[in-house]
Image 1 (cartoon, helix red, strand yellow):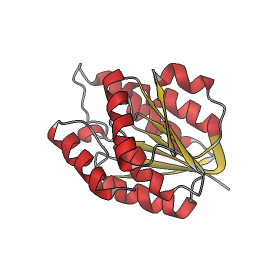
Image 2 (tube, one colour):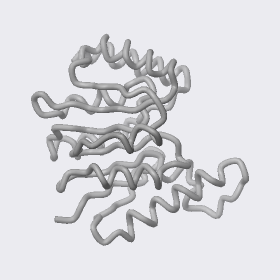
Image 3 (cartoon, one colour):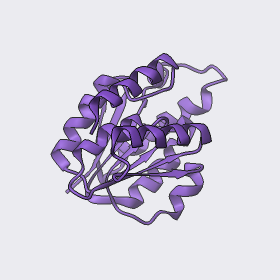
Length: 196
């Protein structure tokens, strides 16, 4: 993997205010992936491909990442970036809306990373649970959403997103089959593992 290229991509994304995984969140995810040595990862929300490229380091030999992105321009940029970093043999991009694509997937994944439309998190969770391997883990980024989720925030513009993120937290913390922790790294990260 070309780390130098990866770093350039990261800098460019930051300069252009393209949302990419924050360093402290990435550190936590790296640790988890190191531990589970995934064969298959699903990512919902590719953006410019930065997180998928970072995650690809922890795949088992011949492991793959499936990642979904609906923004055509981002898909093109991600493809170029993945090529530059030299990991195109490990990452498949599905172009389109995750709400339409997820129900068509019938794979089983070791890790599922959710980082797309905040208002759709409960739907993504339902699909993720269906495709999670027995020892798998679901990671939901930006779960605290600028602190709004844990406050009495109620501005109209973000109300749906905040409500659905709260719904997501409720579901993963109350599901008897899941062990969930919510970390205050980055913009909040929910880690849910299936109980043995």
